[in-house]
Length: 168
Length: 211
Image (cartoon, rainbow over all chains, first blue to last red; front, side, top):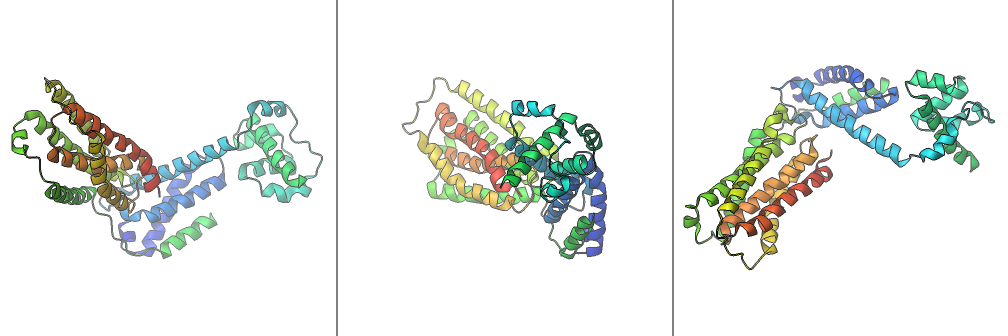
């Protein structure tokens, strides 16, 4: 890092690569999707770049780097959960759908695949697995490390969005 | 993965020689130096209270001023440390204001107990809060301006310390300028508003120091 602060671009590249290698498992342990990890990792690297003048060469690098990573992770999770709460549906409304088969559909997947890809990452993955690859909600839940009910709720929300879009 | 490599290459390309931020202790000393100069100029314009020499023979008045100066030093130190992402790995020092505030509260409570019979309340009231606020606005704005150049990961606490530091300047100034012996008035119109502004600083820190 000291060399990087002196403007050594090669040292800086190595440092950022090493930082990214350290942070990837740190983030993967706390986030469920690879695209989330990648997005946040990029954000952290930019933050490290922006704050590099606050690093003092006489102190160890890792606590400084992890402080920024934790800060960005908390920010991300706060925004993520706030967004989820904002879009949260009424639980009683959900309950009636939890017992429905979510893999049966009257419309073929190919017909709506373009719209599915435009859905938020998690919802798109769930619909793709269920309708393109033919997994059941239980299998998707196991694959993604989620609860079956959470998969059903996410699928239901995705259907709601798709229904709205296709009705236009 | 490809995106990350691209980003790293881009950031590395953008990397020029960077001037490292000063050590927080040095930063804090600079802040205290400017604040002391500002306080001295303010007192030069407003004048010292006429009974100043006599007041400095009263132990509780001296203790109160010392406690205020401790808050001034501790909040400056803490604000400078909290401006760094990892608190410059001096977490314990950053929480020094907690101890100084405990000391301050103790001194004020003892001074209140010793105020027997109680000194008469002055005729004015909120004007003191207004005076402290007006005097503290400039250092507060300046503190936030400087702190925005760093990268605080504890922006709530950093904002709180910045405002407490600025308002401690105002509180010291008024105590050295205003002829007033009522500790009840001082608590009500000097110190409680100062603490209230510290709480506002928690919110202001989020607004001003987020990066």
